Length: 289
Image (cartoon, helix red, strand yellow):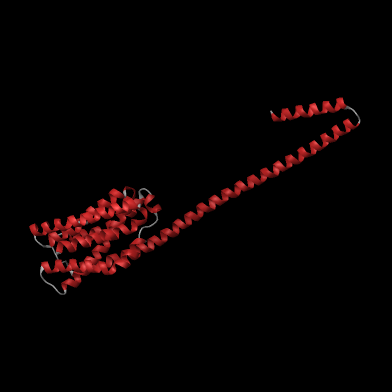
């Protein structure tokens, strides 16, 4: 039963980690990720069964499975979303902080009712899965809007600093609990509870400030574009006015030329009229060249 509980919990973990990336995935890739995750979930049930049978249900085996169980799901996401590696890393860190919080919360509840290692591990896994199921609507809402703007991750190397920040935050706690001790001190467990709360509040503040910063940048870019368009319109307007002036001058010259031709023809001075036309034609050809 314990392998089933752990495998299902890790599958739900993987689903929550996928939520922020949902809008970046084609239907074909999404289908492959779901199929790959489901297959690995079934495989992991049998794998964990043999691990627990061979090594026993103890702190070392349980922690090893919990701390390494995310890796196959992470690889599946990276394989089918190769262009979103920083986002995958960022979401992994945020999910790790959340998982640490829920595991610690489940452990604190279980400790008040059970004493043996097997009971603590079994019911902690069961309660962890129950907590995930109960909080899934809230987690879905939280993780769907988790990722900051893609502009964050496109920055180099700052994008990777942002992507690695949650993992760096949670790594200190993971290193401290990566031992053979099943139950750590009350204050260590307490720190693992308030860590996600403080970090998520801090993260939302940073995200809000960063969004305001990028909104300001976009406004500045739009302002520059509008100024460029305004300059172009002014140049175009000046060109139109210049052309209108030239057309007015040409109209005046044509009117004057027609009057001369009309007067010459009226006086029956055909030769002079033809000579005037030839001169006008020659001047037009010279202006053309």
